[in-house]
Amino acid sequence: MSESIRILSRSELPAEGEAREAVCGNRVLCIAQVNGEIHAVDNACPHRGGPLGQGIVENGTVVCPWHAWAFDLKTGAAAHSPLARVAVYPVRVEGDDVLVQLG
Ligand code: FES
Image (tube, rainbow, N blue to C red):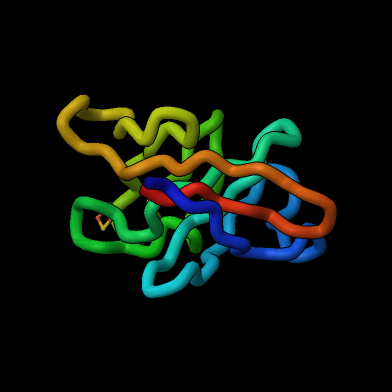
């Protein structure tokens, strides 16, 4: 059974073309906004655990600030290898609340 958890208020969303970290229960997610669409992926980079939410957003990907692996914000797939990916979570906005559906 999946549950939706409020992760941010609308006013706390990253600006267009940017990402930020957001704590959600016992996890940290990377929240990014691209073309008005909100994306949520795991914050920990599968390479060495770099904080994706501190990375830059480029061409629909978030780029890890540590060694520049890039992950597609829609699919979670790494640009350089189909074997590396981050989990992607559905996001919806309800009123002032930004909700993420985990698991
Ligand atoms: S920790 Fe993210 S690219 Fe190395």
